[in-house]
Image (cartoon, rainbow, N blue to C red):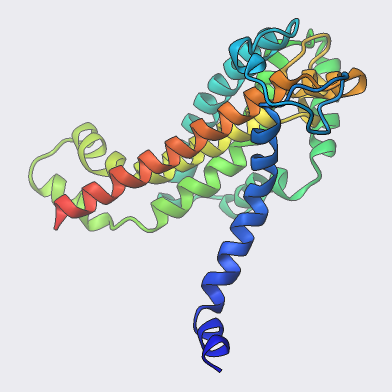
Length: 266
């Protein structure tokens, strides 16, 4: 039958679209319920269409404060993890030294072990050091957690780089700094950007590690968890929708820039 033949030819595309729809469906539900006006405290059932939550996204006490704190921590954790992860990636790919294999294994341990194990270990470390739990302990914990993901993304990009391009730059009398800024960094930039975006998303969204090492500090995921015990403000859906739209725009913008560079290179 023609329909069956068409399905067989496009089976991979159909499976990909269904998987994508499955992944996006929760975000669509969050987006729809950001326009809801529930009768009670819980925003679980559709009641009335309203723009009240979008007009006043900070209408819930302390929500925007926790959101601002999460954005600050995610930004600094991204910077720290990206800088350290990029240097580690170049060192592991470009140089041969003792314990290189062991370091490779240790780098991937945080990705393999349960998150609660790392959270409890960091809490034990901070307590033994007598550190005050709060902003800085969360930041250090997030850098440690995100570092492995950044190294994975950047390392894959560095391994695919052609060293002859850097040799050609040196043959043309470019110094080490100029070679790095003009040749190495632009080629590695997509991997660095991917690692940075992943680190930001992981840091902003993290709850388990933050909950262990936050003390009395409340980030946005902790605020959402606490609010769910008493009710779910519609403003939470508004913030979630805004973050989802921003993430999509960033990805689309990056893809457009990459396509434009490919076309100009041709």
